[in-house]
Length: 114
Image (cartoon, rainbow, N blue to C red; front, side, top):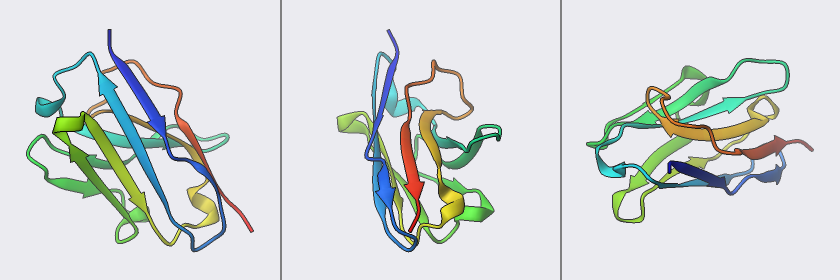
């Protein structure tokens, strides 16, 4: 049974940092391309960052230079380090394969507000 469990979200002031984690089970993690997605209120879910099975990364323009995606295959975990957070980064953050083919987890809420 596939399970994705996101954690690490919270309330942070503009300019602050957070590190999100996503633990995966029920999949052959090491061969999967993975991604972080987010969904802001009233908006569609969007891809934020992706990492291939080989470690190549790609980012949407809005987060380039501020977010870093990484993975630890031994721990079956993908991370999203976020710095210089902005109010417009407020959203529920999810991980999934890239492209998204797995059942969605519960996500983790990130709120950037003074």
